[in-house]
Image 1 (cartoon, rainbow, N blue to C red):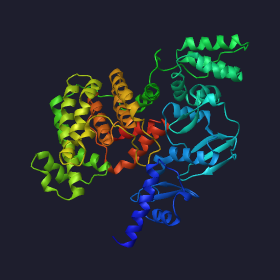
Image 2 (image 1 turned 90 degrees about the vertical axis):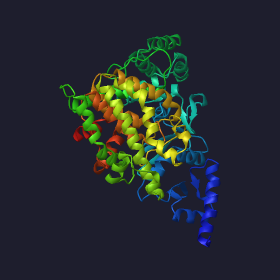
Image 3 (image 1 turned 90 degrees about the horizontal axis):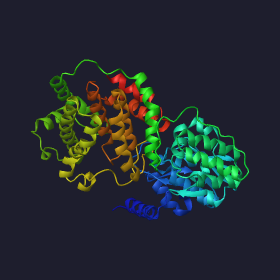
Image 4 (image 1 turned 180 degrees about the vertical axis):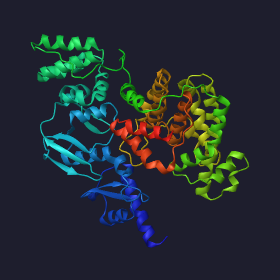
Length: 503
């Protein structure tokens, strides 16, 4: 080992020790100057603001935001704890975002603290922290979620601005659905004498069908001699029925988003063909599209495959020994897995064309698709066998996306709910667009989510008699931007128009 490599290895060892302790926001004082400069030069850490760094990856290109978006929340928590001595709290509006599981990176994080400076602190990639100098709510009205100091659920509802209900109805209805008893809200309302907020919340709970909670808020305030005027803070009725029992906020939010998005899809997506589908002809066309589909789908994911390789894999006259270079071997395994999965999906499409419910077929067969997709890589020792055991068991991040997929605990609730939504949905266009979108939004696997999402899209295409549709690699950026808009802004229109334009 030469001297430069040895010094870099020593610096990386120092960085690893900090990361093993859970450090994400790295202060200058945590590393010796030489280590810091060496790690920065080789791309292992990146400066966020003067004196503060985050771990990075040397293979990230200039302008790549992935390291920052994956570090944002942990960095802010560490930075604010250090600067404000743990005497801070995220605004009630953004506390709501955290409580409902929406970890989308904001352009500006709003923080309250008695030590606030009433000005923004600029961070990288056009993000910032704005800390307002103000008193904090009582300790009973605050909590910690994933290391972030936030208003409690009840306190967030009481202290948020009234415009939240009209501007962010999905988030507000989701948070209201998390309350199971009026007492937790009443305690906050009575402590501060929040009469106007009590009226809004009573109306909000009644809007989502929680009449008992609404009535008890009114009665509780009246018992303390407060006159409350109930008002519905929402601009329309709740689009779904909320059950009496507590349901995952992730599921409630997804169901609300589905209802909000479906009409926009119906307005912009071509109507399903009315002619009866020629099943043998449809399946022949599907198989004829395999080479093109595999080439584009794998290329979108960064694999380098050729039409010739795909033909060899499809014909069955190819074996792993024919590709002994590591990168080529990885690409070839991906191509083999794609063919194996494609065979499974063809069977699923045939079942749907013969009248079986697309949502039920997907639920029953999607695990088999995934096993097939990565089976060759497991056999070759590239992927661990345990990785095929089921949905992911840890966090996952999407390259250059401000959307953070739901935590692993939420997946077990969201995936069955997604299958239910697909089964209940009568409009095939909605199944096509939202089936693909919500699958990649949930991101249930560590890898392969994009390929699986496009398979789901095409299974739902078959359920409406639409043709098998290929997403071309040449339009990858447009495709990813449309998904980002739907994930971060809940704007499904660009993605709907994109898929429609491919048909």
